[in-house]
Image (cartoon, rainbow, N blue to C red; front, side, top):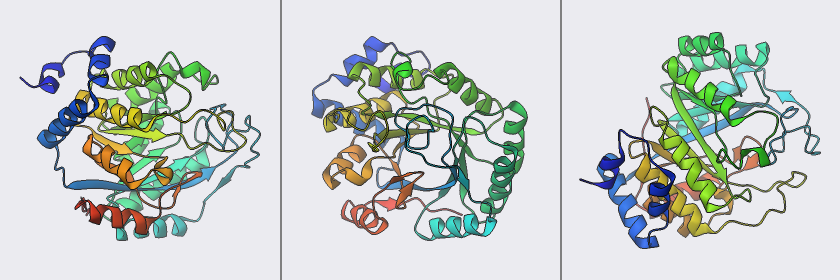
Length: 321
């Protein structure tokens, strides 16, 4: 019996996950790639695009975020209210190979206005034959029901880091509140996109505990987002020490082994990654990324460079519609 099969259907312990994470590097990658081949087409990459429909002015104190009013970055709240801009962005995303269009709104909870805009956009984007994803903080149950009625495919709500390290990054909401939102979304049949940010000063044990948390959900997230911190001037983490690139790859490999059927996405931070590091991430089990030159408020790799990299690696994007 394979390791991933032996672990499926029961809770994974931290000790088991740590033993996997600490395997000799090439043994770990070999094992993760084997799991990836078993459950996924290793020659395909799922590509998403992300548009901010509201940014800035957030009351939360997430230490990594330029949008927080507590971080001294002074980003005023703004929003896109013109549906034409949103639809044009979705059409462009589809044209460059995206099969999922994601919209993000800053804030602890969505205002009635931005929620209504998102609902309208979801219905229109779905007609393009593109999957939809949304991230806008904590939701009430009636809002989740409404999003399901509109046809939302995925809701993104990251746990960010391990339960033990969480309070060092965010104090204005708990990780338990984040998990409650994830469970509410799952309850009403919307697929879950969740993950975290690596390189915020946490240890490898924290990274392992975050992956274990995700792997021990009642159902594995359909989409797992692994971000590498983008250090933004003015935020508390602007001078944090760089994490080791091989530990980043190890975390992806662990996620692949513990959540074999999930799509694992290399998200923020690719702009500064060498092509060789990205290739290692794909070898370790990542099978998705964001395309487009902005991810909410941080930069992303250039589209032309991404498409060229996929071509060099003999990878093709998953079609849509």
